[in-house]
Image (cartoon, rainbow, N blue to C red; front, side, top):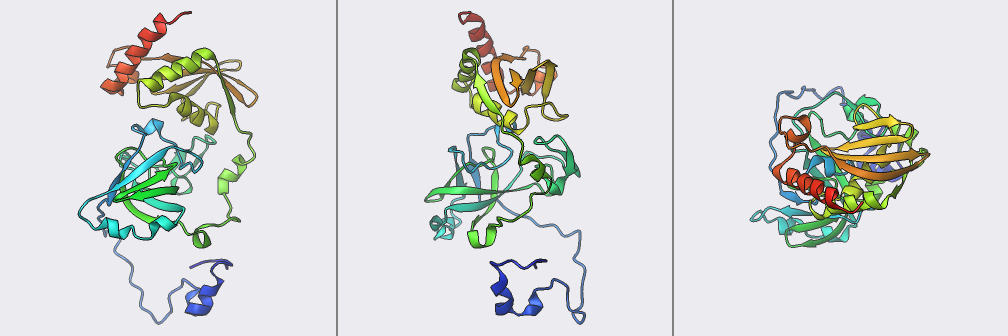
Length: 300
């Protein structure tokens, strides 16, 4: 149960009996250790339709202020339409889902926000013993088997395991401690300016691909604009830095807390044996080729 009394739950002791407050089994009750080799099998109840097609394009956390919409499309012939009854009265929901592209887990994770190493259970990393994700998101609406949400951080095609209502009386803890993230709370937010060239280059990429490159760059640099061992930022010299995002290279100056994006380049070389190009899909490569032609032909 709960180690500390919570004002929203104090009535539970009176209703259920004070003996339920302790999680320690009664001495007279035999205790049998669960079988640690027991496996549980779950089937998805549906899948996510999302604008994020690749891992590097997705936010690292659900963003409740984002206006981007995702759709949870529940499976047919399961009577899930009935299971959604009364959910529309809630403003937010919990979505339980699978990190389906995570292939391994790590006990220690280097986080992008501070560049430090933390135990995986103290992070939101997808590289977990059981790759399960949990997001609290605004509920936009329900149409048949489709649940429309906003601000999701799931990839397109993500399997969904469950949906639960977010209940403020039970799920909100305003006085909760934030552990290692509290040290980041007072860090000034990075602001952004874009040169006309960089803005035009980002717009070209966005028009010709599924990646909103400007949004992606600002989300990445907002986490931490300085180099760490894992965020693929290179310090060139002085206030000049380069952010690598797949084969895109974003060149920027960092002046105080303002990042000035001055140009974008492509590291695409059409040599699939290189580490940069080997990870590109055919569609990615086509966008890079078109970008290189367009960028070379644009007026100086």
